Length: 323
Image (cartoon, rainbow, N blue to C red; front, side, top):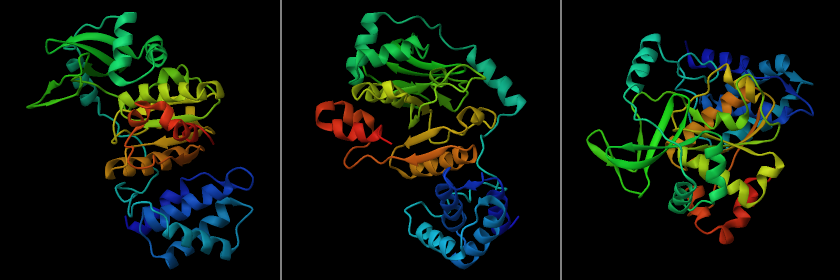
């Protein structure tokens, strides 16, 4: 399949652009996919966008308006070729495991240590270690997202959900990972791409109607909850969801729970994080979400930087939760 054919297939999977219902954003996303996502020349991209315009836009845009969107897309800071990684050009989707892989991971999870509930004292230790409020840690614990365990002979707290678990030492030390050491250890046999689903509501439910902050990394889930509490964003209906890594992808069926929601993405400002942001944006927009990305001002790398001195960074955190 040629790049042009893949681009056409991708456009065909995008939602309609309807005036008054995010039509501008939807059309610009299509222009961005053509020019930056698939790297098409502006002339060809305009021809393809004009064809898409007749079938997906209500009302259709003028050629001059579409030309302006193409030029604006070409000037954006999106990484070139961010959609070329998809072999068939379909809208980004999750990486599904084979039956054999699912069985193998289930066998690996049998080696997991036993988990135990965390005491209030331990929750306070976690909050101090990670510069979080005790309330934020307690919320995650109440949602079943935290547990205790002894791993490699060390007392740890585990961020977990369903078939995924990632451990950190309570004293802040390192754990053995393969032939190296690291601050985090994802337990063997872990499956899943996102954590915090229980905060969105039960399976088959749409969850809260408010906006979603999508962050990168398991500890980012706790940091996102803590940040929301500092500016009362939880009162405005914000929910936090975390990708377990930059390679996380949405399950097609689960995307239905996001349909029509507002999602703000905050990822690490490295190449992997930026690529992940582009891919998640495309997937979520394909599910009818309104999506944008938030960049932390330098030299801040993640929410943890801000939470170490909330008073000094309250304006940034407030902006993060302001639409």
